[in-house]
Image: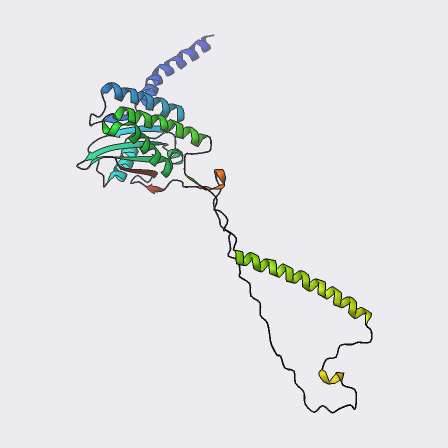
Length: 288
C-alpha cells in the first residue's frame, strides 16, 4: 500500500511540474492576426483572432493574417515567406498553413498569400486568386477590412474542407473537343469503300466465269495467241496507252493527352518556390 501511495505522489508531483510547461508551449504560438496599420478595431482583431485560432486548431492548418506597412511590394514574396518561417507559424511536421500579408505603399494596398506544407495543397494558384477576390468583394473598397478579412478566413476554412475531401478548389480544364470531320475525307472514305466492294464483287464474278471456260487459258505474251505458221512476228513490245492515279486526303491525328482529375480534365495546381529557410512555399497576390 505504501508503494502505491508513493507512486501516486510521484506521479502527482511530475504532473504539477510539467503541466505549466505544456500550457506555456501551447501559449507560445504567435498571434494569428496582427494589425500594425490600424485597419481593425481591437474588438474586430480579437474576433478574427479567435476565428483563426479555432479553424487552425480544428483543421491543423494555420490561418494567419499580418497587416503592416513595413512590407514592400517588390519583395512581398520573400517577406511573406520569411515572416511565416521565422515567427513560428505552421502546424505539424510540414508547417502546414497560410499567411495573408496586407501591405500599403504610395500606390495603394497590396496583398500576398504564402502557403506552406499541406497549405499548398489546400490553396492552388487558382484558389489563391479566388481568396483575394473574396476580400475585394466584401471589404467595401477598403472601408470595411473586417468584413473582407472575415469572409476570407471563413472561405479558407471551406477550401481546407474541400482539400480534405480530395477535391481542392482549383480550375478544371475539360477534355478537348474532337476535331470536326472533313467532308473531303469522308467522301474519299465512302468512295474507297464503294470501289472496294465493287472490286470484290467483280472478282468473284470473273472467277466463276473463268472456272466454267476450260478452253481459254491465259498467255504471257502477245505472240502466243498467234496460230503457228499464220504469220511471222519479228519484233514485239508492250505499249501502255494510259494510267490512272487515285489520291485520298490523310486525316489529321486527333490524339491528345491530359492528366486525370475530376470531370475528366486536369487541374491548374500550385506553383512553388523555396524560401530562404529552405522550405517549399506556394503563393500569389496582387494590388487591390
